[in-house]
Length: 480
Image: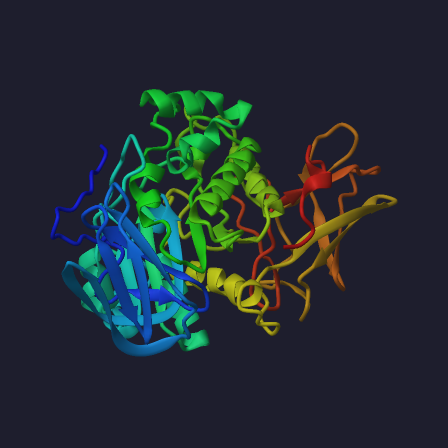
């Protein structure tokens, strides 16, 4: 569906994302745009600024407010274009765009048979944060980029969170940022359960990559590829938000790409194409893009006809790790957050939001005192019948979270048969061995879909799954 958006001679129309109670991004130019009659003069006033534009032949106009300082003072934004619009209760702070499939979409309370989040009643009752605002985009699939998408800004409260079914992961991220930065936070959610990555990617980007040609063809023809039509959610739910000024984006998706198409490392390229396309279209440079590595789930255990191996999920984990080579990205690990291996939706969204916020605080907001990652594999060396694994993000030390011997390490010799390994922490390293493997060649950690390892740092963050025998071992980042 293509949404048309035009205004008559005396009308003034704005996109839904520009409205009462919104948060404007601080410290960068802020686009304000809309539609009126062609040639109409437009004046926008906010926070002592006065900006002017003239509507083009289609009636669209745009001004850019100069950099604004953070402000929790509710102010008015006035637009004059023949007609007059006054937007009220506007704050200035940090704005994040939050997208993905059902784990991003999942609210704090109950929805569609999904279990609510941990302590959901208490969380909702305590969710009174007038300086946190959120916008939830309507579900819209469009054949062409749409000028607008339904939605309204809401002031964060227990009632508004429950009524809108706003993303729990996004809310907990925003809450943590608000507590730490002590400024207004704006969250824009654009998510749709069960969706693959290709529908969130613009056609122009898919067309440039030969390996993604079949998805580009599906997008052009409006035909399903791997069960879904590419490009349509970008058109309907991402493009209409642009060029609203944001600090960065959060992404929580990949489950649907683990199933059916068995993407494996191909998912890295799909992430790169989508991220670079979003950045180019937004026109804000390489803004931060932080994402969630999927939690353990019994894909093979529950859907063997769709996922033929318990290593399909680890291959997606590796692809998500490899995507950290994309400029200004970050990833959180969630191997400890699956409450039930037969439930694809972790109910502890509090820690997911907090961990995303830790990455943002450290990498975007320059907080040197914040540890944002668990033990991160750097390199391995073979010492006789042992393999020594070296890690960073070890400040405070490496630990077994439950005090038991480290688990989910396996080791193999030249025959490639991986056996359960003994793993012992020695300073910033882990020494891995098995008496039956006299000449080890490779080690794997958490390399099964049901792996819930106990290897953490003292900051309470888990290590990411890895394998030393990866076909892309030399390309995997040793930090981010």
